Length: 440
Image (cartoon, rainbow, N blue to C red):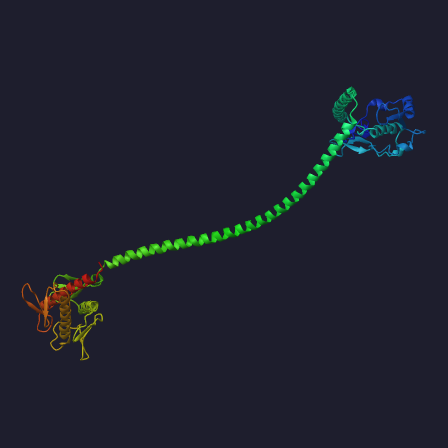
């Protein structure tokens, strides 16, 4: 837009605040019309339009430039003028003030401002308005007018109804009804007072119940905590109980198994390995073709002494003249009354022509085994050992041959067979003792 085409904008819409351009007719007010407007007054009706009492307010004073003192706020709704101009970067338009003050305003501009101000003062709508805002306001006023007309119709109908009632109202009846209504009012007020007191009492009771409810709620939470604690302890106790029951059942099972187990048979396993009698897999004896080490023979004698000692202790037998002492592979027989020990272990070759203690120990052991045999046969006359023993010899009843338990003046085969028969007698004695002391 060139400088010549710039158009001054003096007013803005009082609703949307957008600049507006007035109609050209307002710009072309003639001198006669201006004089007429300066002399005419706005007629302001007081109340009902049918009322004859009116008063007037002049727009201008005598000089046409000042306002009447009755309208001191003539410029309260005045909007400072703006004009359109180019933007700084030349890409659009912007509004800028014309820089004019009230003293330099033209008479026509003041007249327009006074007109708009007068219109704004005599209605609830500020002027001027743009076309869109004016249309919106007209629609609103139309709706209000229709509402007012509907109300007027209602009042008019009610007035016509009252005018059609010819009979005068019965004042006495109305007074009587009024008195009854007053008495009813007093009664209702007294009932209301009582109800308020009852309400206050109920509120107090509710407050007390609420307090008790809070206390009960706290007690409930405390009880639930205690319940949870005891429930946890109960679960742990039940777990311990089940664990103990399982342990007891396992222990009973093991106990029953142990009761059915022959401890002597488990501890002392007597069997044979060819020509050798064995106890716990230790061979007892020697052969020319099989040279058994003396450490194994000594260990076998230690197990044998331990077995005889356990059997005698089990049946409560005390040997005469001797006491067998289990001491591993260095076990021995103690001669009672002589403070002498007879070793049941060797450390050299087979022939000990000048060392008779080992032979004496074996003879003493066989004597103790004979005492055990006699004690068993005394308690059970039907029980007999398979081999007879007497004076250091063992007799085979099937052949009648006797085998010496000594090494001297004896062969390795006969000595080994005598030891094998001796272990067989011990095995039978072990079986008898086990049968006597096993619970049914």
